[in-house]
Amino acid sequence: MSNYRKERINDAVSQELAIALRSARDPVLAASFVSVTRAEVAADLKIAKIFVSFLQGEEKEVLNALKRASGMLRRHLAATLNLRITPELLFVSDRSLAHGAHIASLLHQIEEDDKRIAEERKKAGGEESNE
Image 1 (cartoon, helix red, strand yellow):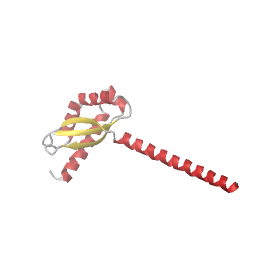
Image 2: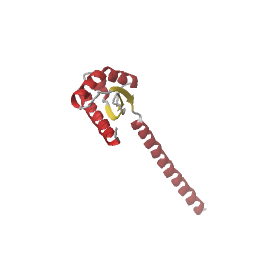
Image 3: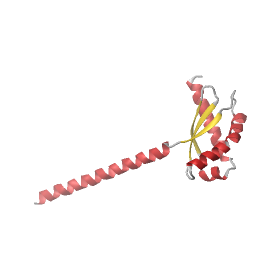
Image 4: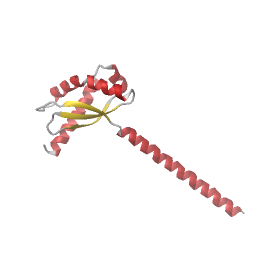
């Protein structure tokens, strides 16, 4: 399968799953604000790894709710996408958003430390010139 077709299928699967998740009746999914961050469909179309992020809830609980809803989600994909095979859905928690937030906080902390050190050096330099 060409990379272009594979990317189109990945995008279509992630978009359609995002639409289907909005109409999910599971209270865990409704309360967790689940977002599909990306999809990786295998070349043979048998398995799709779906990366999700969520704002609330326990990871294990949300992934179990997604597993319970996978039949409904697969039926939605089969009805909306023109694929030879509808892939089995495997849900994985996407930690890239949390990782990115952690890196941003570390960079912010470094910036604050640099400002503090520069001010301390400035004060130390000013005290030496007063003597």
